[in-house]
Length: 141
Image (cartoon, rainbow, N blue to C red; front, side, top):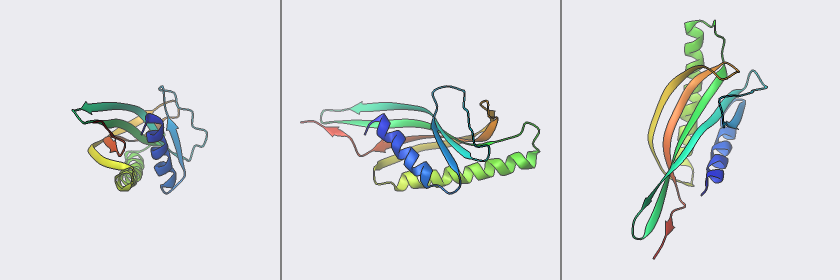
């Protein structure tokens, strides 16, 4: 499975999550979000590691996503905490669906963090880093 198919998998899962979600593959730090009420799921980075042995190639993708919602610079701490909690719930649902997908052979090294006031749309939420191995390994004799 290629980079293109991995982004398609992420987009499909993002579309199945509850709520109004916008899915974006970002190439830079500018993010124009037209719907101010939408939650945004952004792939900010995908890299791959290929392990080679005598009989096979095993490719593992390292992927970084952000789950974001428009925020106000002057928002109260309680408001920011509620926003982060909502994005954590969305992120957790995403992780569970990735883990249950038939194309995913392995989900590993899942770690998360918080992001505040990002991009030109002033969005806050959570960042997810994870390794995904798909059922696409080539075997050679």
